[in-house]
Each structure stands twice: as structure tokens, then as C-alpha cells.
Image 1 (cartoon, rainbow, N blue to C red):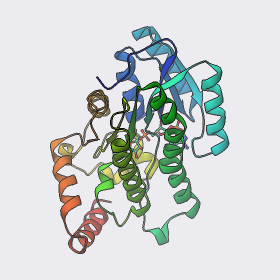
Image 2: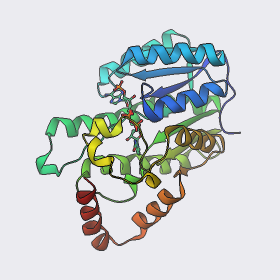
Image 3: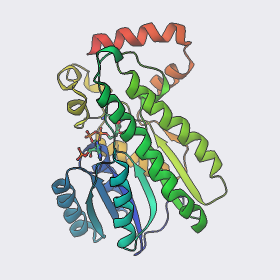
Image 4: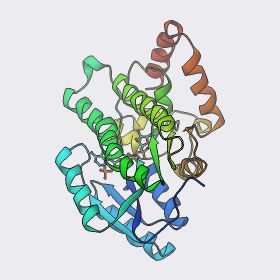
Length: 268
Ligand SMILES: NC(=O)c1ccc[n+]([C@@H]2O[C@H](COP(=O)([O-])OP(=O)(O)OC[C@H]3O[C@@H](n4cnc5c(N)ncnc54)[C@H](OP(=O)(O)O)[C@@H]3O)[C@@H](O)[C@H]2O)c1
């Protein structure tokens, strides 16, 4: 079994737990008996969830507000966790956001902020907590990437590039960790009904996407935690998404780029 046994001093740190997939993963882990440390900017939501999970599953749960794009806030987060006497034995790097516009039409600061949250924070937390997991000989990391990781996407170039970073990093580190007792699983969801589309400014356009393409965050969370439990390298939840991932990976860029650009432009 790849997930460490729940214990008093261990926690599952879940970023982006105030909504969507992160909230669902926190629920899934708590239902399996793991104490959870919930992180995002919206503290009230985290507090409500922490209270609910403690009551329902009898697990320890705390809410810590942090803007993960801010290096000083990440430092304070680590101090808070250390101060609580907790060891991060499960790390779920889920916080992230996207956007939709050509690079020339995008807000520069927003793109840089996206890189900070989607990539820098994910790498920082991983580099912070992995060494102790390896020393203990147990631990699990779940990095939430996306099917956007499998090919460049004109129209959301930066978002797709951040997810390609997450996937590439995760696959390589998964291999580095072989034999250590620690696992790393990248999860690549396709479209999931969450607040993501609103945060990305594509809420109205995404309503036109047929139901068959959407998955619920609970199903994605279960696939993610089951994947980590089994020490999987990459999980792509849903048959259609697996087919899309294969196509994205194996179609020559010369053919794929104009098609992907047209699909993205038509969809949004
Ligand atoms: N929904 C999809 O279709 C989809 C598909 C593939 C991959 N994903 C990925 O799945 C992950 C979760 O997305 P979601 O769909 O669950 O979206 P969501 O409902 O918008 O949730 C995003 C979470 O990230 C947190 N977050 C964003 N910026 C943050 C910051 N600066 N500091 C701390 N927390 C921050 C948000 O919390 P606060 O706002 O409270 O800070 C929220 O909890 C993301 O990495 C996303 O790229 C989503």
C-alpha cells in the first residue's frame, strides 16, 4: 500500500482545498482516516470544511489561509505546520488556476501569478517535504496536472505550459523515488465542474461543452487517491480523457497545433 497509515503526528497537506477538486480530495482522504491540513486563501471555507470533516470522520483537520503564490506565505505555512508538531506524510499539490486569451492579449501579471501558483508553489512544497518523507521511508505526493499537459494549447498557452511542467517534473521524480517507500502520482483531469471556469473567465463558454466531456470532482478525487494508494505514476481519469491524452502526445505538432488552436477558439 502506497499511502502511509494515518497517525496522530502525520498530516495530509491539501492545497486549494477551499473548492473543487482539492476539496473533494480532502474529503476522500478524511473518509479514509487521514488527518488533513487544508490550505487556500479563503479561510472561512476551509474552516467550515475542517469542522465538517472532523465531525463526520473523527479526524484532525485544520484550516490555514495562505496565498501560495507568495514565497513568504509558504514559509509561514511551513512554520505553522511545524508549530503544530505535524509531519507532512501526504502532500496534495492541487491549487491552481487558468485563463483563456492569446499571450499578446493576456495580462502579464496574471500570467506570472499563474506560473507562481501552478509551478513554483508546487515545486517548493514538494522540495520542502519530500526529503523528510524519503528519510522516513514513507509518504505520498499527488500533483494535479491536467490533460492540457499533453500538448501545447494556443489560446491558453501559459496554462498548458504550467501543466506540462507539472507532468514532466512528476514523472521524473516518480522514477527517482523508486525503492524509497515514497510515491508521486500526477493526476491529469479533463474538464471538471468546479469554480475553475469562473476563475479562468470561461464560465459561459464552457457551458456549451456537452455533458459527456465533464466529470465530477468526487470521481476525480477518488481516482487520484486510489492512484496514489497504488503508487501509480500518472492517472488520467475518464476514457475520453485517456483517448485525448494519447492523441495529444502522439500527433505531430505540425498537425496538432492548428487543430487545437481552432478547437479552443471555437469552444471559447
Ligand atoms: N476544473 C477543471 O476542468 C480542471 C481540469 C484539469 C485540471 N484542473 C486543475 O485542478 C486543480 C484544482 O482546480 P479546480 O478545478 O478544483 O478549480 P477551483 O474550483 O477554482 O479551485 C482552485 C483552488 O485553488 C486555490 N487557489 C487558487 N489560487 C491560489 C493561491 N494563490 N493560493 C492558494 N490557493 C489558491 C483556490 O482557493 P482560494 O481561491 O480560496 O485561494 C481553490 O481552492 C488546478 O490545479 C487546476 O489547474 C482543473
